[in-house]
Length: 330
View (cartoon, rainbow, N blue to C red):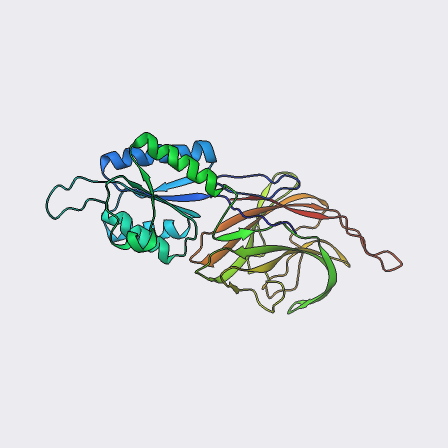
């Protein structure tokens, strides 16, 4: 099984290519203040990251209420990289600071959330004090806008920040199907089954209550149907349909199967009615799944299935001509 270290933002798709993993544009949380000159530079940083490195940049501009703060916290949790820019400010009064207090608070939160690969820059003359002194003992200095953008470009390239990296939940390519006798509350079956590995890349948080369902099926005719079975799918290797994936650990989901004694595609699910196929006829289908874990972004993913069912031969051999491929992540 080849590892894929990426995912996609909802609304954008990256198609699978033979021999390659499916990726999303890695998300960069850009923390650099909210005053007009700082916003102007943040937008230029965003354009640089997107145009030259195909990374998504989140800019935390509006912070006025508790809801805004909670939104920023969620965005930070779902980000893959953290970029900190400490601009020098001219205090407006004796009570004002020479730097953005809020960006320093974001830095503290990022450190708490276990970001292991930060890029930090500090404008020449800005004081190295407070939390910054303990977390970033030697931030990269810059003198002006041109110097700042040039150093960000070099640092991102040198650190190897990639659009194919995620520090959250990552889907790996579907493995080769295995043939075995499968038993659950609905009966015993001789099956070929496909599994997908879900990796938790977070170093600080477990993926609690991880569940997956089949959401819809696109028929060979192009018709999109809601899945007739919306119950949780089984996690492989355990007698359960919900799982906690520990930090830097993984689990595997039983995505779909075919049975030796009956044509069609089947699910290993929690549904308590007799097991029925979700589709029967041979053909090319696209199956859309949803994967949810507490505190993690919802993942939508698509699996391309070429169903070609063959019953066991008279000598007991059961060939499997069907294929399943992870096609896209949303």
